[in-house]
Image (cartoon, rainbow, N blue to C red; front, side):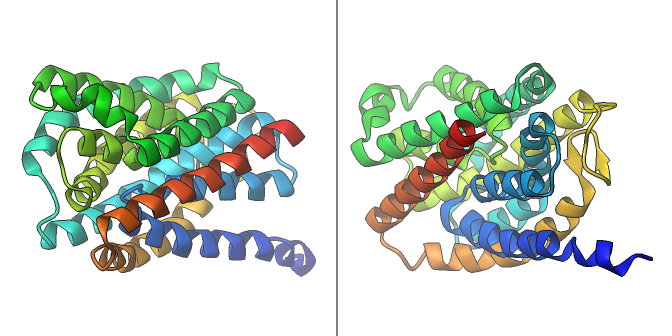
Length: 276
């Protein structure tokens, strides 16, 4: 075994471990499944290791969705124990979230890496602005009793979330708040919805990335198994810490933390497009 080659992978492995801890805490704190941390971190790590920029974003997004499965389960369980999960909303959203996410995952291969980065950045800014100015509540608040509105929202959230590689929390949380949920209950329910997004999206990215050239080693479709193992385990273990922290913060504070987080992540992704 060439130990010099093996040693060269340690920064990548260490970076994945740090990403797992941070994304897990973010998942529990914000109900976002950790994808907003995982996607830019994994994308940058793969680019630094010299992998094809055209497949890097797809691998980051697909792997992020796979990682969100255990993270979302741990986060949702923690919130459910605290009574912050609306099962009625979950049942209403789940089938349409699955459909929208699966279609998005299948279509992801049609888009370039830069298109996926732009989708991520623009949506992050829009979501952050919505959290601060609450324009979604003004536009949709009167429709909170409509089942059709919930189902259409679920389809849109599922599709966009699959292209961003997120558990949908950054879209689901403000939507549920606009429909009348408290911030804490929106975060908890979003974590559970994120599991449905992650399972369906992972399947879509696995299929659309099957047989693609230039993928990093240990990849199945657009899912990288090394990142899945390291980040997934650590994120799942750390998600309950974030959930506990979320319930110690006031709703207003939680909203501003959420918005600031999205702006920083959006700027980072936009920087990758401009400098790439």
